[in-house]
Length: 112
Length: 112
Image (cartoon, chains in turn red, blue):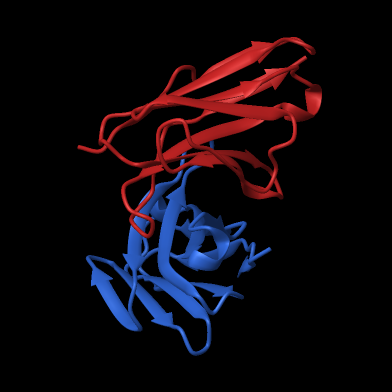
């Protein structure tokens, strides 16, 4: 059964803190993605990765970085959290370039 | 930016009726098309995918693709109150680096 897990369902951080969001998939998928979702703006792609140690910027990479040291794990890093990064963060993975994409349960991040 | 457009709704249908959800996309190079369902506070879950022109049926759901018109739709037969959710149309295009582009979603309300 397909499984994508995220380290936290809810997270509260203070402005300026460094924040790590972890995502793990157990399907041996090549491709992994980080999105944020905000009311009225829909799902927006932050970063994605086609392979270990490889990353590509999405539509809104500013203020974020990523790390993929192992195939199954893709981390999103907020170097210095700001209030405008309060959002739902969704991780996803898929095998091939045009295959079905599966989502994790999401992390609701609040930055105070 | 490759556009995926959906009517935001809400689309209201009575229980037992057919719900018709529509999506248009701007990139003629788009290759794979997906419908996700998202309940409030939850992550998107895959309903259907379609790659070729025509209809594809799965239980109460039918996806329809017309590449010439750049149009994809989702029909839900015998709608149930549990179908009330936001439906996201998503498209993969090689011209966009194979990232999954999402529409902003259509809110469906099935009334008893």
